[in-house]
Image 1 (cartoon, rainbow, N blue to C red):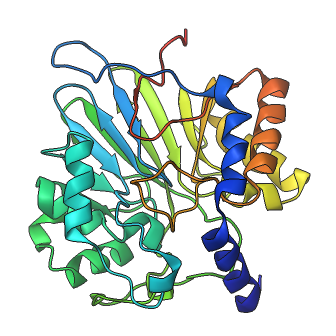
Image 2: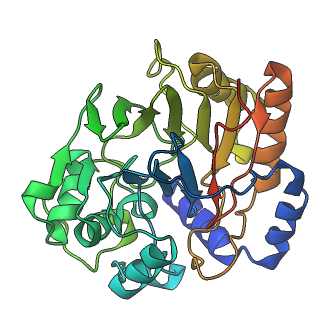
Length: 318
């Protein structure tokens, strides 16, 4: 994709408004049911979706977050992005977050890693991710003792959780490729938050296994030998790809790990704030239709997350 086409796509996403929101109503029957937040000693894991690939996991004793993108600056600020501390603290409070064990970034683009260091700072969490993610943290003043650079195969325990990082790929595009090689100072343009290394993240807790695929990309071999009950599957841009690509993506991720439930993520317009209902990006319906068809083919359930709602993603799975 040429740079001009990337900018056009970004503009379209910025302009996506209520017209696109109607698409969510068509999929209401697929929404994950609300659940009470896990409490200490209940042997449960609950998950809250906060847009894009931001997911809050809690087992009543330990909480951790994927990405932590909460500021969601408007497109008008694309050339000078920075975390909004007041917004981050507001959204953490709304989610009931006081302390986190870890914040893990699937890759270093702004819609995944912009706020992760600040979330780590405000919650005492470890920031986990690539060297590029670490340099976003360093540029925001996060102390080195709260930064852990991970590589393929690293598996880290936090309470009853275990987080494993597996090298993956981003949806094919030409936006923000490369590494962040030194501490990144803010405000910074969106394109300065380069991809770094993309990860599939496997979370395990007392026999339950969750895979987070933050972007609709794959290498084809990253998940060999790994299993997951539920896949939080990146769907952004998937509807614009070919049926062949969609099938290969599904097979490489969902079929490889033997998942029985798929929860699409990264389908919302990430330039709109979390104070309003999430609005799907263009192509959401095509992405959903493709995933539903593939799920029917393989007997895999598709369930949509609802923002700010605690769910128990493995509930009902044998």
